[in-house]
Length: 165
Image (cartoon, rainbow, N blue to C red):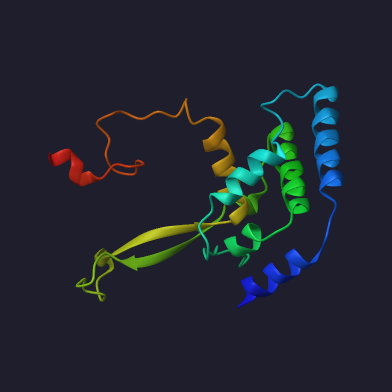
């Protein structure tokens, strides 16, 4: 319900694409001119790629934002997030709220005994900004984050069933 409301709001506000491109170029050139290298700044393009990789309808535990708010947002938000992340990288600190998570217990199976605590696994809901920053870093450093070829769990296009074959 709220996602549709915000989608309508974000699409109804017009902006000039050339102005947004100019803002992005000025932002990039001003940070490079000051002496920051490409590892210190997060580009608008990186933020856009990360946000478009978010799954729809996912919520966080701390503030109550939904991924739909970001997926349906205008380009101005991407510029603001890139400024925020660049500032975090330059200063080398993360606000405490970005390190918080809410752990939700999930039953391990359909036939799990819900009266026993061992029948649950926990999932951590992190701040959407943290998810976006994680995705930016994963996309940026994907080549350097290789795992062993014998790892099957928690790996793209792999399943733990594959290790038995």
